[in-house]
Amino acid sequence: MAGGAVKVTVNTPDLLVIDDRPLVFAIMLILFILAFVAVGFFLVSEGIWAGLIFGGFGGGLGLIGYALFVRRVQVVFHRPEGWIELRRKSVFSTETVRHGLSEVSHAELDILRGAGTSNTWRVVLVIPEGESAGHHPITLAYSNGPGHQRCKDAINAWLGVE
Image (cartoon, rainbow, N blue to C red; front, side, top):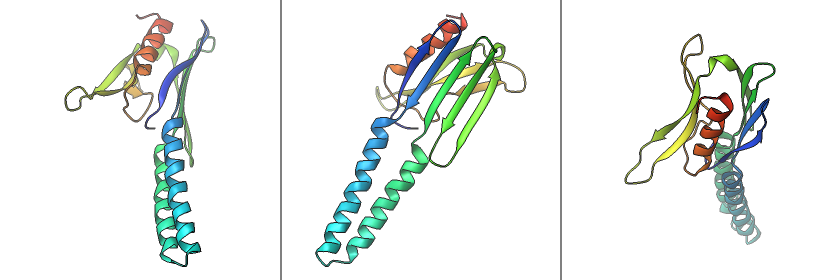
């Protein structure tokens, strides 16, 4: 999931929902696909049959990119039933992973250091022990923007571990 804006969409004492919908990235890929297909159609209409290859190859690459990289992620923290659910949805699959609320100690930022000041990050849930021990990223891709810090802070406040 690249280029998404991670944000808190619901924050009540019983329910916290974090969403990542990569709309900008998805729109850019759709425009990429449409541009290649449109140029391909134009070339074919002018009698240049290589336009089929141009439109098919460029549009096909865009579709593959869309299928591989555009993922909607939703994380639901449900206090009454005591669980946290990570939901990832792409063109081809839906993945749901559930952890007990008591298993998660806190959230933190996982930073990928770039050249100069171009750091990117993602929010990870920390499970210190048990079968699911480790750092569990909310999003698979790193990105920049203030949404990650806000989500980490909201998760930790909701868990009561500021």
